[in-house]
Image 1 (spheres, each protein chain N blue to C red):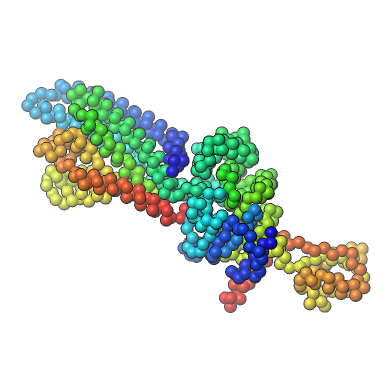
Image 2 (cartoon, rainbow over the protein chains, first blue to last red; image 1 turned 135 degrees about the vertical axis):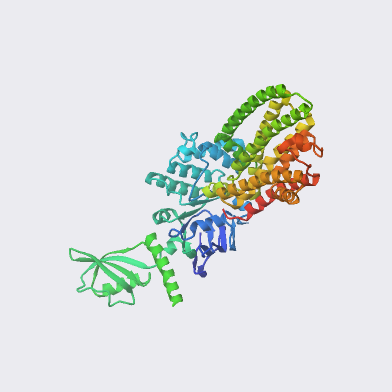
Length: 333
Length: 285
């Protein structure tokens, strides 16, 4: 999908083909007393993707999701889910939701909870029966479905919550910190489940502050900080925040990259092994790679290895957060 | 609406709230029955002299009225405690989030709660009203109040209506405030209503206008006591009688509330429910 849409402080830097979006918001704002909440959030979530909504604790992620689902009313702005205005009943017909603070009536059994939710989604009794068994099996609670939720561990409650979110076979699934109570095996299972759901064409809106989780499963990412959207876009495009390479070479005495400021923005020697020096270089841009190699070849350098470094989400996250703070700092001055 | 109504009923049944209350109520009926049985024996021995008939009438209405008064009191408390947290507690615990993320309107949610709670309260009210009436009719002998079936039906409907009105008002508070605050406000309203009722009756006897006005204001504010007294009048059929107060005692009324007051009470309940829906539609969860 040719989807790319970079926004920084509401300014569109680049926009390609707009596909069919299942979630769209336009300057959606929910402010509480003291200006807490989320402000002017404009996003587009493409169909069939895992969309990571990232931000530190208290950034306004859950407020945004709760506004989308009509649990809280927006202060201003608009939004649609599957083409229907948020807070309308139609917008919630094909939506599943696992809240961050998952609490379910503890006097119910897991099976009763799923039956109750399937009744609310107007499934007929035959569909209910099939779906409930399928979901209990999917979340690994098939033997515990008749136990009361009060007897469930936190992880089991999160599992039944996931089953609950999927009961209506929704097209859009909001998962707010879906692995917060799970052990590593449980987390892996949820990640696999999310991938499976994506394979089925579902769109998953994943709210998380666990960067590693988002990094492994999300195609698209939005970063929010202090209630404001910092950036959103294709994860691969977002990750191209700077060009870093690891280069291993020999044959150049007193090698220093300070003399090439037009190509190399930063350099750090990692190791020297058997006369070969390995450097971590931050380049001006992607085009600087061949130019740098040419320049080193001219200097009679012997190149053994050039590895393009992939940024991890933590770096990207910090990059965008810092960039926002720099912009704010300049604006305040 | 129906899944919410079913959930409400199931919740109270599963939590055994109703079972415990029903057993306690059964115990209350047994004690009331024993009390009535022994009291009627004593009345039979006392029933001598020219004022005997009046004294017997007074004692029988007082015993029956007392039973109904405490039955109404328990029913009202149960209505308050079961309804007052039915929405606010769900919001406080965040259990409401997964429910309201479903394609269900806020009005349906409130109506579901109302229907579920009302059905339970109606069943319980009928059980308690008929229990007290049965004790008076079958164990009362000398204390038996002669009532027709239509009187029982009319009084029973008014008895049931009390708890429905309370559920509607409790839901309104529950959509706006925390469970604790709503509970305190509702109990205060209930006590004020009862107190206002007694002051109004005393004002009626002593012809003190201020006392009468106080009663009228409290009955407009929370008309539960008015409903109870209308029920007593319909059951004892002696309102506007010069010796009405003498036969009805402290549970009766010196004057029957007008039909407009009953219309007001009906509208009061409807408006409370409407405000509950509006308030819930506007609030953030």
